[in-house]
Image (cartoon, rainbow, N blue to C red; front, side, top):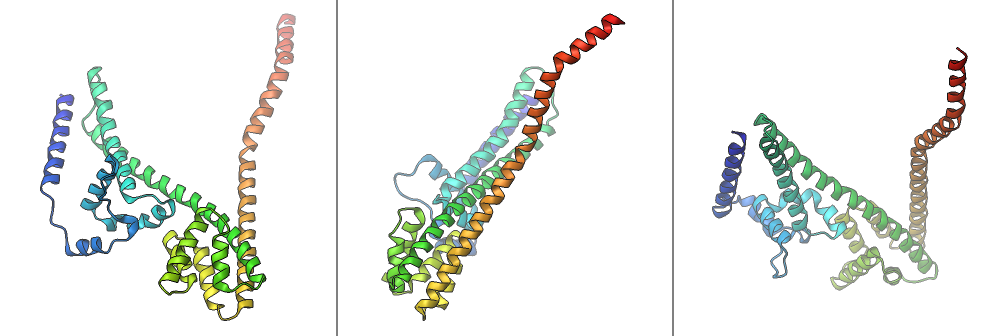
Length: 298
């Protein structure tokens, strides 16, 4: 009885999805305007080289609305990952979570084990939400790791920039030379931001501020703001940037020391268990021999 109901429910859901795709709902005016003004990180792909995941993600974003993915815009931008791929991964995780309990129920039903129909329904909903949650959590963790790597590159950029300013280079010329000093992702992005700002006639530090806002890296925005405030005095700019470089180095060193202590503390329990196992291994023959002699004497 359970297996026919499950198959019927799956067929019904499939027919509903087909009808939902053929007869789309009328979008609201706000969503239509937001779609026209959506940022580049959430732009929908329309090229001919799109893969299956891209097409699935594009369909999902169009149905749900790009504004629903706005909270993940910075994480997607710092990872240089298209929103279509992220939406497709969320959909696949949800579908897998929905289908897995149904498959498990079918196996149990084929084995002759009866299960209440409400259990797989709630399990499907739970697994679907858990799958989407894991995809979102993995995105946040990967974005945090990438931001830490970019902060390390930012420290190197500030060191080079401080040396160039100490050598009496002009502010904008020093920014351009420092951005060309490395081939990391931050150096490439800063070089592009400085070039775009120069073409549009804006201050170069404005490009750094926009990059920090797009990637949600507070250090970039604070450095751009401090440099803009002190732009009238070259010595003040140099002192500000050198102070920022020292503070970032100190913060990174403190974070690395904290991480090292945390990793060392995690080794305490394995070391204790190894010591206990070694003591037991050394004492076991003596204890067993003493117990054997005691039993023989008794």
